[in-house]
Length: 127
Image (cartoon, rainbow, N blue to C red):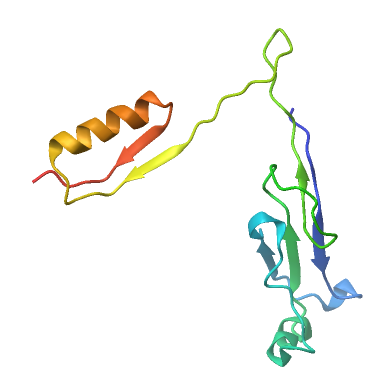
């Protein structure tokens, strides 16, 4: 089992008997809630609350520091080798979409990217 701790913010009716059964979940980028309901500033936001929607915002990125009180953060475990050393490996996804390039350039780029440890998806059409 892997344990982690994530901060979240939930807006719900005081009396859950008034809840509509709709949950809107938002995973804010870098922990910054940009879609928080604010009926005072945006009157149309009130419709979600009037209809009994439950709003949930939660952190999901483990590399985000708690730089402001409003930023949501998550604490995730650090992988270790058998000797206790931290696993220091990234697995990234590269996306090559240079359809105007030659096959030779695409092959060379693929080799360089793979050599750096990235997993490459190439969606070019070979014509």
